[in-house]
Amino acid sequence: MRILIADDHRLIVEGVKIKLAELGADTEFSVAMDVDQLRHSLQHDPAPDLALIDLAMPGGDGHAHLAETIRQLPGVPVIVLSGSEDPALMKALLAMGVQGFIPKAYSPEVMLSAVRLVLCGGVYVPPMLLQDLDDATRTASQDEAAASMEERLRKLLTERQVDVLRLLSQGKPNKVIAHNLGISEGTVKIHLAAIFRALKVRNRVEAAVASRRISGL
Image (cartoon, rainbow, N blue to C red):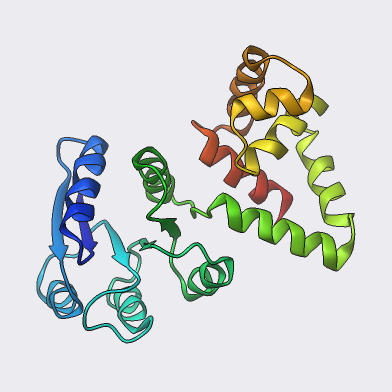
């Protein structure tokens, strides 16, 4: 598998390469440190299986280099790396056609999970944007969307598991979920294992995304 990384910070590039090497021994990388190098790679290098593109790069003009990457790599998933955590920006880029948005403040483990999700055909949406979408939906249709989500999820999960999943989707750690629901952390872990099985996912990130897909948000 070949992965294109476009970022002008060498430390970030090397860190991304080290973590994504866990995808498999056959993982190879090409690197672009500015927009000119990115264009050269798009025109002359073999097409990658995945592209991770920094939103702010030397030689860039807004989001033009991102749009060019999407256009030059039809069928190749593109993930944005960014120091921004602005939900409006995330929405705009997802609408443009990127398959994920990973804030640089996130951990390497979250990045790896997000990449695996995208490689499986999913779209990685940061929890903060999920919450923003949830708040917007509640404002537009009062509690109708939330009720619809709970109705669909209850076909797969128990009421308590729905409560756990809701807090998980808000980015709450196990300790906070346990405190909010008045249960032990061990019980939270048991519920999470059941949720992962029911939704056919492997981790917290994929569970949050799957819950939104089921709810239609």
